[in-house]
Length: 180
Image (tube, rainbow, N blue to C red; front, side):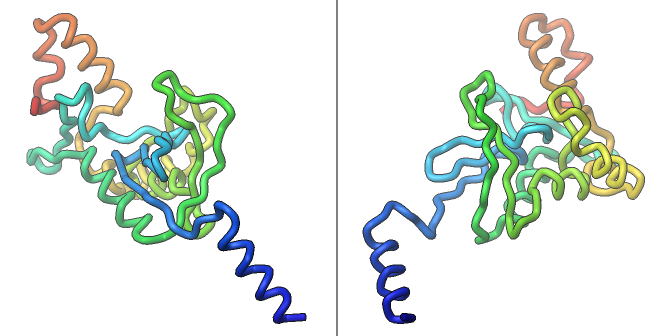
């Protein structure tokens, strides 16, 4: 009986499209690409590594400039490591055509992890406060980005969009951005 099961398992692996490997790329703290599919973590937001392929978001720790988007991205890279990622996809895509999903490593939500460690924010506009408890925990314990001066990513993007239309608004954003 065990031989038959083993033989059937081997046949299944060789004659189906099932794959044990994943081609994973971490694009930033809340966006990954798995086997060519771009996946945006729904309900959270992280600082931007680059925006409009030009602007980098800055935070400050003891008056020192920090590329906070890179911090969040690196925290995600560290967490995923070489582990398999499983995602629960939403039916609708975002306005840029990305798949929206909550993704897991070893049955732990990457979104919950990033927010609880302070490297992402509960994007209340979309999450319905799903990650609020994790955010309160990170803030109260002064973790990750909560140790720094920062603009929330959605506020930062709004200021960048305003600046792109009206360069006279530079004073509102210049300390929070670097242009590549």
